[in-house]
Amino acid sequence: MFMKVNVPISNEDYPAYMMGTNLFLVKDLVQGEKKDIAGEIIEKKPTVALFGGGGWTFTSFTMENMMNSGYDMTVNTSEISFPLGLAAELPLNPMISLVPFGRFAWSKSSMNLTMPYPQMVIDSYMPFQYHYVWLIQFKDSSYTSTRMDYGADINLRPFRNAPEWKISVGTVLSQIEGMSKGNLLIIASIKREWGKYYSSTMFGPKLY
Figure (cartoon, rainbow, N blue to C red):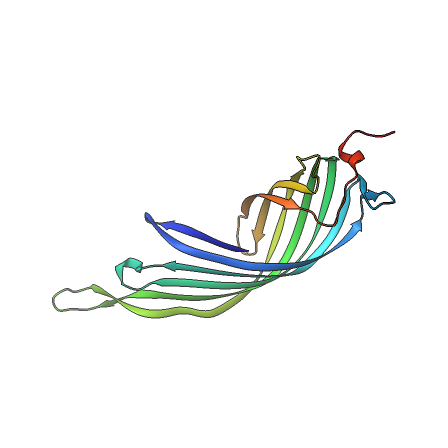
């Protein structure tokens, strides 16, 4: 994953970057896909899966010419996390399914903050004038935290002739340790499945 955004502060836009990667292992506790002798999926019932793994995320934010000091403020953060969770797929019909999930994650984050710091000096002509000096306030400070995410997706398979393509729309509520309120995310994505083959009887006319 790589993402570039602009952060608006005081009518100015400042660049921020985020990149990361995740690796998950998934184990089906309840397998709800029924296949025929040819290996094609002919029926879908509720599926429950356990997943876990690890992830790494890096973010960088720069505020140029902070407070007209001529210096930039930069914030770099790095996070390593180890999530564990449960997810289910509840088919409402062959083309629509509900996917609730919950995830607990332990993470360790480090931050490096560099910024100009206003230092008051006494001047005989201009008392209390502020001068700016280049200081490193925090460097490689690290902390551990836990996070609980839960939410649900709605998966839509709009193409009868291409059921491996699906549109996913859902919400995620993320509760981070030490925060009184969680962060609500709304996510929409297009996904494609590999290695799964759906029978035409599942999405087309029923054969009896």
